[in-house]
Length: 49
Image (tube, rainbow, N blue to C red):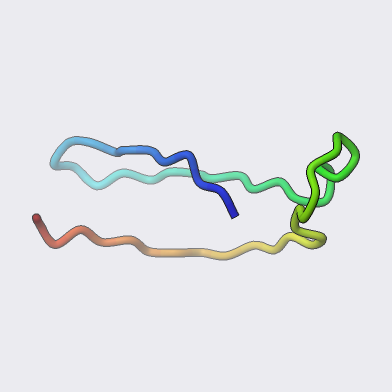
């Protein structure tokens, strides 16, 4: 898995959508790409630094 990273700023709650691709990467030569994908709902919290 590779995550480039992103930052959501501000003091307000924010909703984000992330899209992961896997099986289609093998057609362009990416070795070890995920062979199946799924749907997951995650709640992320930041309790301060």
